[in-house]
Structures are given as C-alpha cells and as structure tokens.
Image (cartoon, rainbow over the protein chains, first blue to last red):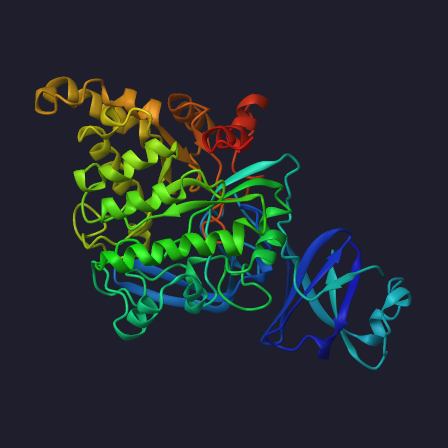
Length: 137
Length: 369
C-alpha cells in the first residue's frame, strides 16, 4: 500500500472536494465536516465522473408514507443517473450486491510524519509544521 | 510523488468509443427565449410577451412532474459559459460529439411550439425553431442533422411546414411527440404522414408532450417514476392507433421512429394485436394484414432508454424479433437518463450487428452517405 500526500489540510476545508489522478486512477477526496473520504471518480454503472455529483441524504422508508431522511450530506449521487453511494464505504444503495465504488481511506497526518516518505521530496512543498491530508492506495 | 491535480474531473466521457456512431436523440436547448426572436415575426414576439403560451393542460410553468435533476439533465452538462444543459454547441462537441466519435447526430428539440392551443402561434414557433436549428446547429457542425418540428395539432399547417423544408439537407426527419390531443392514428394527423411520405422523411415520435389527457391510461399518477415508465404505455397506444386507424396501410412508404420509450414491449404488443385482429378484423377492414407486419416493416426504434434485463439473452431475444436492422443508437444527451455508448450493448454481438446498431441503420434510414 502506497501513501500519497494530497494537500495541506487547510487547502481542503470542510465542504470542499479535490479531484486528482494517482497512478492513472481518477480519485476525489472530500472533506465532509472535518472528516476525509476518498472515492474512485468513476461510476461503476456507466462510467460517469461520479464525484462531480451532489452530496445528499438517504431517504428511507419502513412503510408507505413513513419517510426518514438519514445520512445527510454523506450520500453521493451520480451526476448522470442518480445512483446513490455511501461516501464512507462506496456502497451502492440501488444494487449493493453487484456495484460498489472503490473507497480510499484518507486522513490527516502531521507534517512531521509525512515528511519521512519518499513521495514528499518530488513535488509537494512540505512545511513540516503543518498537517497534511494523506490517502492510502 | 507524482499526483496530477485537476479543478474538476474532465468533462469528456471517460470511456470514449473508437468506431464512429450515430446518436439519434440529442436535445439542443435555447439559452434564452430571445434566441428565437430573430426567427419570429414582431407580431408573435409581442404575443408571447403579452399573452404567453397556452398549452392543453395546466401546470405548464414548470413540468407537471418534478424531474430527477435540473432541466432533467446531467449535472455535468452545464456549459462553462453558462446557460442550460444542451445550449452550447462548443460544449456539446467537447462533451458528446468528439469523445464518442459521433458521425451523425439527430437533433430533437423539446419545449418548442408543439401542442399549444393557438395553432397559428404553434406554427410560427415551430418554424422559428427549425430556422434556429439550421442557424445555431446544423450549419455550424455538419455531423448534426435536424428534425422538422411541426405544429402537430393542425395537420394542414404541419404538412405545409414539412413541404417547405422538404429537400433541405439540414433535416432528416419530422418530429412528433407521443402525448397529443388524440391518439396519433387519428385523421387530424394524416396530412403530416402524407407530407412526410412524399418528402421521403421518417416521422419520429418522441416521448413527452402534454395533450391535456392524463399521462397514463388510468389517470394522473403521483410520481415522476410513473411518468418515466408511462412513456412505453403511451407509445404502445400511439402505435396501436397508427396500425388500427390504417395509417400504415394508407401510407405504405411511411417510416416511423419510436423515440425514447423503450422497445422491449414491441413483440408482446404485436403478438396481442395480431391475436385480436384475427378475431375482430371485421371491425377494421381497412387493416388488411396482421398488425405485426406493418410494425416490422414500417417502424424503427431508438435505444435510449436501452433495455437492461438481468439476462442478456433476454435482450437478444427481443432484438431478434424486432430485427438488428431496426434499432438506432441514441444517448438522449444532455438528459439525465443518458446512455453511455461504450456501456449499453452487452458482449456477444457480432461485428455486423454491432455496426448496424451503432451507425449503419441510422445512416440508411436517414439517407446519410
């Protein structure tokens, strides 16, 4: 598993997302209320750029007329056909058995720890005193 | 570290297809209402601003059912220069035509002047839309061909519009909608079929339209999802009417294209029509042959929404009955139920059928060399 430094933490504030390409894979990293999530930016259904879709909630119903709106802001809706995926796991809600988006764990690490990696020297100007968003691939 | 950052993901389809295709259902939009004014007499500009447009049913300020996404379109299809999805030629080229190697794109404008109560205004708006299609689209990109939009509820003025455009290579078909004041086989629409047959143009019947009737045979449904599946019911009624009123018998060279209502239902509708025709044909003596024969000889089908059964063999069975030479590939760009060319057809189709499906049938039907 390779570790990639994505951004300085303050460059990816809550409510934003960042699109990038790692080893040819299109990926997006989301900051949702201070939590970081990485997802493959390709819908497993017909290949749309999934991560350009809106973040919505999940309408669930136990009985007709009884509707609960859950997971607010944590469900990614494909910009083409509206398929819904859980940002935490990549799970599909319309066909969980057959479709899942690859999820990449992302988190924040102090600069002091990421500076040790072999990737830092090449392109990222690291300020050791800052925190960085890191994704494991 | 070697990471490429992007402002957003690329607009182009991530899975471009290499072989050329035809896209038989593209929806161009106007950025503003004033875009049509250069093609409308002052009298009608004034009319629009003072009186507006009166449709056959209410609630037309917005669509009668809320759509899945803004303008019922892909969220990634807003042009960078602003305006609604489908309103920019350069962005359509970048997002649809170039990456998918579209060799022929058939334009079907919606929200035009079809199905409104003032038939003179309807005719004027439709004619303006046709001029606008040439000016803004087909004259600027030779891959694009237009459909002649006609004021369908007045068959005579519709026929006049078709005759005026006949022979103009910018146009490849006549466009009707599936929901009208009456079923499409009725006499009021016959002048349209006569003019189209004379001009050698297929008549496309696109899903939607608001004719004042409930959008299902059993009344007004609650949900948009019911409207979506209702398009196939509506097209079935239209097709039954065309057969049973004798339109295909009367206009034997007429070619109809069923657009955006699926095709999986075609065999069962034809089987059922044949069965009842054998028992009840004395009621409709002008229908001289089994209904399925007219359907198989005179009807084509666009693919979006592509049927998607669990077993691909079921899909192939249906297509085998319809004929691999009768399907026209369509994306429905920029609408949200868009079909991605590289993903719609399962494996297991031979090269000839695949080529016919994606390109050959459309070129033949629309007379594109």
